[in-house]
Length: 89
Image (cartoon, rainbow, N blue to C red; front, side, top):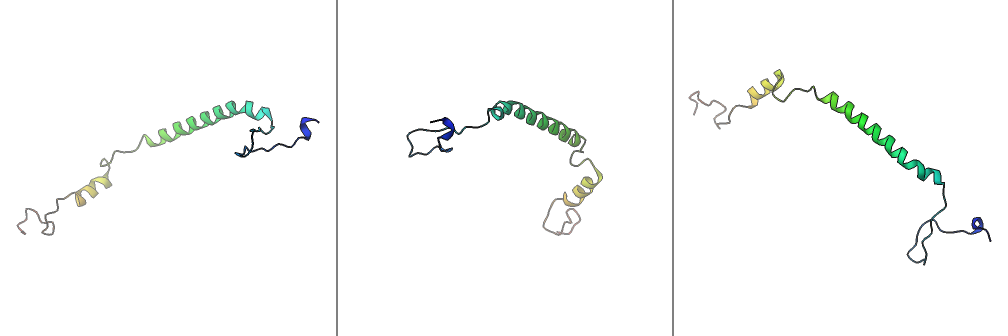
């Protein structure tokens, strides 16, 4: 009886006494390290691109819009309608 004529399960079963490994293409296993290295190179390039695109951002509060928002919302809340120091208490 040849090995090709024997049908073996491709998934291990707790009920079986033996674990079977499905026959497959060995070249796909040997190509895996190169594939993983390629993925790593691609991710490194993407990270470098993303970091260079975000390093030129202004710090919060260093632009005109942030300064205007801080002037409006940065006043202390006094409970008297925002008239601190204006004699409105």
